[in-house]
Image 1 (cartoon, rainbow, N blue to C red):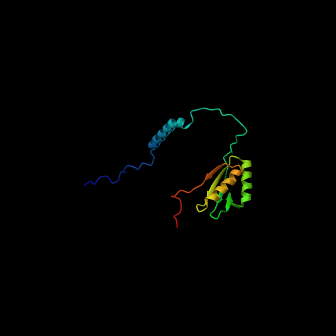
Image 2: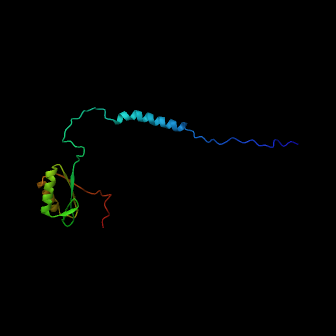
Image 3: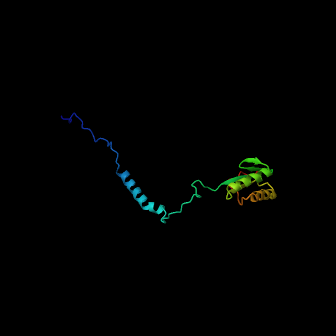
Length: 144
C-alpha cells in the first residue's frame, strides 16, 4: 500500500517585498495637484517696487502697553509709573515713533474719568493711536 511520497513540498512563501505602486500613484497625484495650484498661490501682478533707505525690513508698528488697575495706578509696559513720569515716558515714545500705538487696558471697576484722564495724557504726549484691549465674555472668568 502506497501512502505517497515521504518528502513534503513547501507551500508558497510569504511575499517579503513591499508593493510601492500605490505609493508612487499617490505621490504622482500630489505632484500634479501642486503643479496645478502653485501658480494660483503666487501673485500674478509683477511689480518692481521702488527702493528707499527709509523702508527697513525690521520696521514694525511699535506699541506701548498702558494698564490702569482698579485703584487708578498706571503701569507703562508693566512697570508702575507716577502721573508726571507717565507723561514724560509717553512723550519720549512719541518722539522716537509718533505712529506708536497705545494699548490701553483698564479695569472695569475704574471710573470713566480716570480712563479719560490717562487717554488725555497719551494724546498730549503726541500718541493719537489708542487701542482699547478687552476680553471676550467666553474667555472671562465667571463673576463672583
